[in-house]
Amino acid sequence: MENYGTEDIAHNINSNNPYLRLGISRSASKEEIKKAYFKLAGIYHPDKGGDSEKFKLLNEAYQNVYNNIENTQSEDSDSKNPEESNAPEGHAEYEEGRSKTESQKQEKILESTTWESLFESIRFAETLSGSNEDFSAQELIDRIIGVRDGSQRIDRITRTYGLRDKVQELSKEDFYTTEAGKRQLIDSSTSIESLFTNLQRLGSIPGSNEDFSAQELIDRIIGVRDGSQRIDRITRTYGLRDKVLDILEEMHV
Image (cartoon, rainbow, N blue to C red):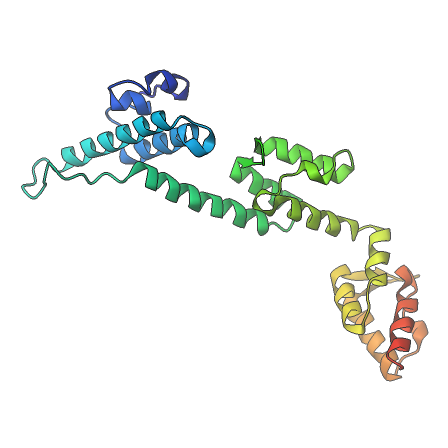
């Protein structure tokens, strides 16, 4: 398919030829027409800093070309009314499509549970709007890597789609994989229930001679609480034994 490309569209947007305005050939399919329209709408839409008059010309071209296809496909049908336009409203369709895409971008970012899945979600978004500028996927990924290694501040990450909050969430998860983070997680437990939740979050804790699974430790703590186990059955790693003693004392056990 002959494609004039977006680099020529700015020159051809004022053309009387609707195909030149869209940068497509006369043989373009409906899907190709929509794809060209959505790409250019992202450039000319006033909300994106574009020219409202050029956006109007783009919409006119879109409806004109779309109607040409409809008329060609229906030219042998007596039921077709040539005065009637079946072309979708370009502006409305763009807004609908953009809204759906924005929703998908946010959903993917919020559902990310690892750095890898977050980076994939950012690549899916392609660009994210900040308060004063748009950021490319790679620019955001580079900034996030900088936040992770300490060379960038968190305020360098846009809040759009909850991205900054997600980065902070994953950074906290990273911290809890360190020795200091694990100790802090245990120390932050204020009740037997929160201690069990944090143990499950850690998955396992090393002892002097072996590793203990979260469930094994929970069972032993329950035993200490019930009097069927001795406190020395609880490892001292990450301050766990002292934390159990503190919580049981609070409970007057």
